[in-house]
Amino acid sequence: MTDHLIELREQAGLASCAKRYNEVISIYKNYLKNHGDIPPLDRQMLYIAYNKLILDYNFKSYWKLTSIELSKKIDFDYLEIIENEIDFLCNDIIQLIDNYFLASTSNKDSDIVMTLRQRGDFLFFNSSIARPATKQIMLQSALRSYTEGVERSRLTLPINEPERVLIQLRKYACDVQLSNGICNSHTHSELVDAIQEMKSSISSSDENPLLVQMESYRLELEKMQF
Image (tube, rainbow, N blue to C red; front, side, top):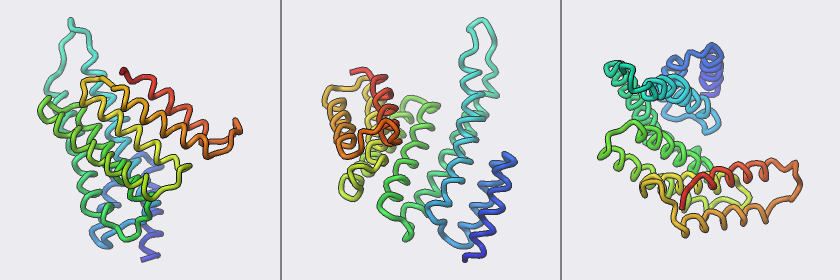
């Protein structure tokens, strides 16, 4: 299996460098079909490939089309093609997560939390192009993934683990979407407390990368209305 894993890394790495992200996904799928699992660290390149195709390629085209001035004609056929591609990619990676990664025996506690966050993220992405009824279902499913991740992180991860606050931030952002853009005071204070708890457990040095991350979380939090 080690030789096969080395081959996976080499092939996927070359395809990724060449920005052939569909090929990266195909390589990983073939590996999963034959071996049934991928070590957590090696999954990151697969997530990146899906993110590139969903966000950098399809969503950029989607946002460009939907931001066209009303006086200009929108190509709705092309828009539907983009929506279908985003929907396919999001569902595709979610199936891989459900069928392989969440049940992997190679997962550590932090890997499970991160995988739940990734699952929630792809559902969250997909909800942004979904019709209203489907959007709510997707956001509720994403919220369940985030909530499970938050509960697991509290039980299994150290206080100074960035993933604890990161998945909490995702959970609350999803909750805000389900509440029509409103972040209630309880949600706000709960997240601030989690950030402060993490800050108090680490060095106060300006060079500490965790504090830099905390600042980015704070800025994201301020974007929420409550």
